[in-house]
Image: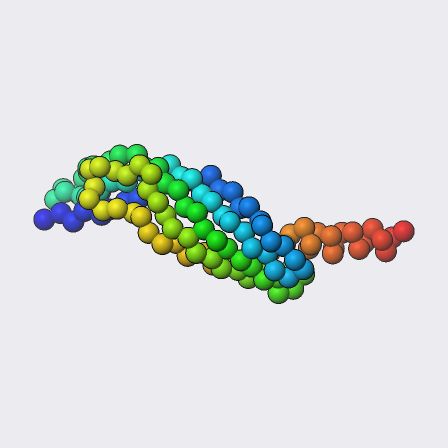
Length: 125
């Protein structure tokens, strides 16, 4: 008896539109559009891998996200959205429409760079 595994993988183009930014707070609308594959994989009694029902998918993930800048260099954020399958695999009964949750740990590399290197330039003048 073989057990099949449902696989769902994609690569996405990501845009994060910031609509509110103050000293410590930032709110944005992250949007992803992805393309990929979904399929069933299983191994037969001889251990040979088989794939069935493979087909392309297209998805869209709008969300709302916020973050708080804890220090000059680090921040924490969270958000929520929904995955919408624009093109789903007709060969698989499972649908991947689903809520999504976002948890962020932000590192502000620009601030770190300015703190370390620009301070040295000022000190050397």
